[in-house]
Image 1 (tube, rainbow, N blue to C red):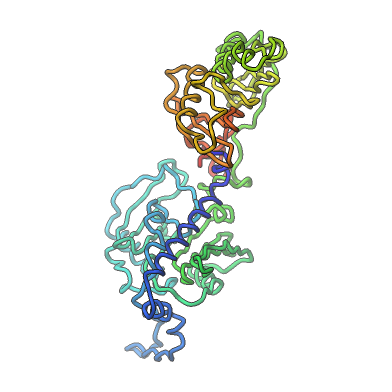
Image 2 (image 1 turned 45 degrees about the vertical axis):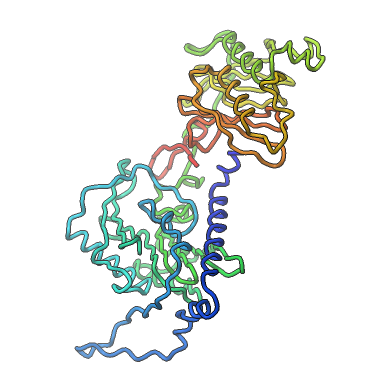
Length: 495
């Protein structure tokens, strides 16, 4: 069950955000009744555009007047809809509701000197003036906090983050050239229509380039009445970069600049932050096992007898002792034998250099299991409906509405402690109960690895192993170890 959530985290996070936004927006609308509701919807830039604008006066020197930001109505889009508390919590604000990777190696750097801070504030003011059509009356750019952040891993250039008073805006620039990476505006009125292509052309021009051919409509969310709340668009630039534009209530308020298409697809600025694209990210080492002789284990590996004992300890805990199961089900020794035959255990040698050797156990009608030869952890196991007939451990008669309760916790804790040793088990907790007959329980080990025990109707069907708490791929730890081929950085896929 957890594997489903992890492999679909981007979609699920977006869907959940859409639901939250829809509910928040609907609740906000309910605050306005009658004339108040009509008033806030009419006072938009669309309504203002219908009025004849006054000609702009010439400047004192007689030169043509420059464009000024449109006067903003008093009503601003609700903070609840923008959800800036979540979007602004990281160094790089999220202009959309999509999940995006944020490196853990960012650290706050030395204090920004006054000259650089002033230049950054001026740059931010220009960005919001030219691209968002807002001026100093909307944000006090002169007092914006300017903070330097440094990537301790060395894969990303230093950045400056500017934050407006009360989180009224957040902007990230490169320190070296003050180039725009992300800008988000948290105070703006709702307007009438979206002009994404025109806005994209203006952003491209500001960035010193033109629009390319690529474009993508990421969609967005709607309220319960079907009205658009937010929309996201991406556009290719002729120099290979991409930009993402975010609109809420039809108003452009977020811009993000990406180094390439793959960065855009994952909603990050730097290629170093790409974590999933097959064109950039590869496994550090593919699996490479060859069969060895179980009678001649490598130095440091457990022997066949040690592995067989571990297997029997697991099976006796998970399925009850063999004699008890035979009595409970009226089976013979031949039908229900826990002892391993020579052909039921196979030994494999790792040639990748990133995994352990392992023993594979195939006990027909009971279990199919891989056990790491040195550390003794279960890499993966599929079970043939195991259950312990002891009254204290029996789960098969527990109804669905009580699945995942103390009985399940007790069973998994008992099995884990009997298999790996009581001193190695940290805690056990329920993960999910779903689809009328299924349950998953997680057992966390002292060394950081954890197991997910999967049940159907109270019977143990599968054990999934994860090498660390937030790892994204089950099995060997190396199966989740990837390298970004642009930077050479190795990392574990995490959810």
